Image (tube, rainbow, N blue to C red; front, top):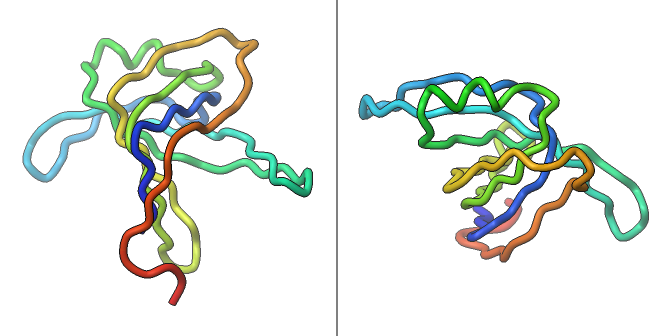
Length: 116
């Protein structure tokens, strides 16, 4: 598994926030963002990041599709069924200016095996 601590992601919300309940009965908000990442060779790719946030239901109205947010937290990268999945456990979520650009900043650590 790849884990990135203290990550800041700036992107547009692609799936509006909804309230969900965890296995232990705690409620949390869940939404998705899609930042566009540019590789060194100049190619751009949009990635889908699933975000979970211990916010209250009142925040759902501001976390709607098309709003640009900056999310701070821990990003985990997993490979399931041949597909790479990104999960961000957010500590804070802020709505930011539409002029801000897509970005991911943070430090990456590797645990376990990489590849097969």
